Image (cartoon, rainbow, N blue to C red):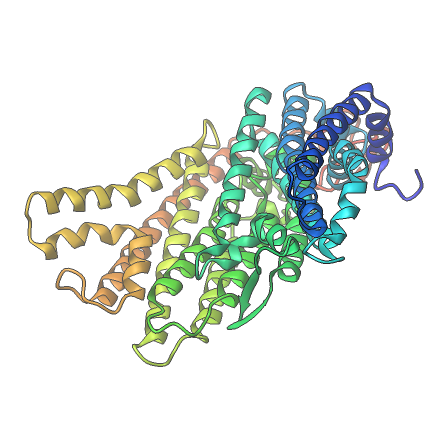
Length: 527
């Protein structure tokens, strides 16, 4: 296969295409699909009242779209997740890495093999797909619907790949993927809610309804309603590129990422910030709810970046052990402020872009600034606490999971305590104070213009930002204690020869991580 994206793709795709399961699956799918189609035609012709031909073609177009959608968005991604989880369980991925295959080559190979059967099923249903051009959606209906469906399928498969590699057991990967896909489909169905039209990019519903002529799918961009399909295609293409990077990094080195890796997490945060800010409609009489939802989405989009920003204990120890000035530590072996800059910068940029569209009255500039302060201090506190946990625990156990659960309890418990105080008939001013620890509630306070419990809501939101800033200072002190432990560990290590597998003086190669070794080794023996 000339031009194939990697040897794994060149080997897996023809092999999958020749498998008996592929041909059997296509045959069974074709029989069931065309059987349902025959029943539809019989019902249309034998009901005594013949409907319009355009209505019939629209119906069969919808049936083909549903059938292919189930395969492309649910069944095939779950199979890919199970396969990658099984490869991880059987330790075959390290063997693939020893062959010299890069993460991108492996990702394209597994993705291509997973899409073979759905592509065959698209060919099986192609006559019905083409017949949809005569429906009420017009001649371009199949192109509009299936362009979105295919890009959405790529995104869902990449999400499934990340889920599969993150799953502990292969038997759980398929069910977890189905759950994640259903959540994405549910979010995509919220495009009918005013102010949440942008969520339609996560699902096929808007494009499917628009292509059938049943409903218009529009997304506001800077206050102007534009057709949803082009915006969705661009967004899905960018999202696919980010997730492909995430899957490639996980396949190249499973330890390099907690979930998606720092580069992919930064891409997700940037994409979420752009969508949250650009899709605001500046025509609200009271924009409080719309601004709050977008600021909350901005914070959620930056959350994966907080998980990926901390450095691993072993990397910092390896960097601290480098004493040769000609062999400086690699970027992932340093602990500096550059790790923490992308998150606050993206949050501030998204908040600024949103604030420029808000009305000049009601102190919206000040309110947006306070909300940005809440987001930045909360993100910084979470990232520093995660870094401190990884250093103090030496990455033993599951420090990331422990910190995530602790943060969830820290931010949710005040809401429960506030409700308990209210039930005990405490003063309303007192019941509002525990909620200051919840950043989502602080964002709500920064966006509202009405007094809350006798307090100025902007003052309460500012207090929340101040509390998290102080907590971030405490977490920074813990990080310093963790750095001391790294230094103490490195000082206790015994210095070994540069190459334990060959005599000193015969070192001719240097691996990407900086290890020196003899030329007899095809791959670095230290790694």
